[in-house]
Image (cartoon, rainbow, N blue to C red; front, side):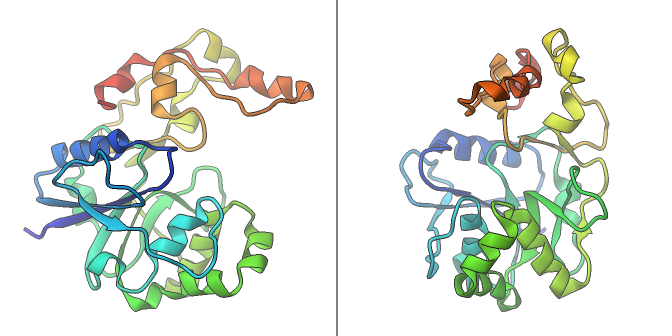
Length: 258
C-alpha cells in the first residue's frame, strides 16, 4: 500500500508547533496507511522528529493573508514531491473518524476539495482539505498571482479559496468534491440557532460517514472547547453582531483536540 503524503503549512504565531504535532498524530491514528507528514514552515522549533520539515517556497511578491498558502503550494516541484499525490489539511480541523476511504478516493490525477457550504452552484471549494498530484500544470496558480497581484487582490480581496477554485475550474472544467457528509462545518452544522447558543451546547455530529469537522473563521477548536468566541470589533454599533457570536463550552471537542 502506497505511503500517503499529508501536508500542512504554518507561519508566524497564529498556530503553534503543538497544533502541527496534534494534526499529525490524529491523522496517523485514523488510518491504516503509512503516512509521511510534511510541514512547510518558517520555524521547525517544537515540531516532532517524525515530521518532514520543509521551508515555505519563496514567491516573487508579498502574498497577503491566506494567499500565502496558494502561492506556496503551487510552486514548481513542491517539497520534492513532483508526480505524487498530497493531501492538505488545515491545522484546526478535527479528525473524528478513519480517513482510509478519503485517502483511497482519488483514482485519477484530478484536484479534490470540499464543496463550500456557504456558496451556491458548486463552483467554490472550501480549503480546509484538498488533494492534488504535484505537477507543473498547477504552477500558473502561483505565477499568475506573482504577475497580477494587484488585479487579483482587487477582484478577490481575501477570498483565496475563490481564486483557487476559479483556477482549478480553468484546468479541469469543474471542481471535484469529496463525498457529501465526509466533512462538516462546526459553524454551519454544530452551532445551534443564534438564540439557542446561550442555552444549548453544540451537539456532536453523529453521522457515520463523517470524517472531519472543519473550523473556519471563529471560533477555533480551543476557543469553542472553553466557550470563547473572540471578537475583533471595537465599534459599539456592531454590538448586535456579538449577540450571535456566542458558544457554550463544548467538552466533546477535547476527545479529538489533544
